[in-house]
Every structure is written in structure tokens, then in C-alpha cells.
Length: 44
Image (cartoon, rainbow, N blue to C red; front, side, top):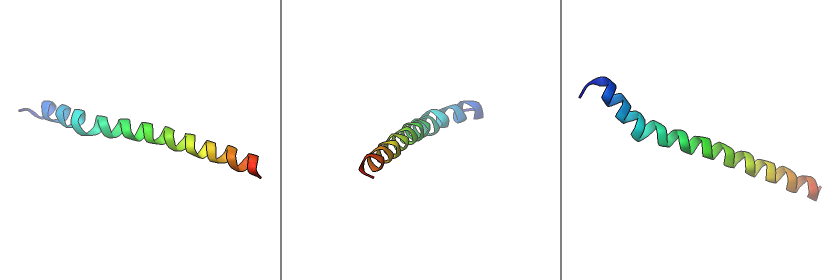
């Protein structure tokens, strides 16, 4: 197995899923922080 094929395999199995989780995780954190800001604003 040559290096380019190996790195492509590593990317598909490790980097791509982690990237997806990070992207989704960051959007989820943004939504939660926005919701918390709205709740605290309406409560305060």
C-alpha cells in the first residue's frame, strides 16, 4: 500500500468523522448558547 492510499484511508476513517462531529458540535454549542442568552434575557 502506498502512502497516498494510506493517508486517504486514514482521512476517511478518522479525519472526516471527527470533522463532522466538530462541525455539528460547534453548531450545537452555538444553538445552546443562543437559547441560554434568550432565556436569560427574557428572565432578566
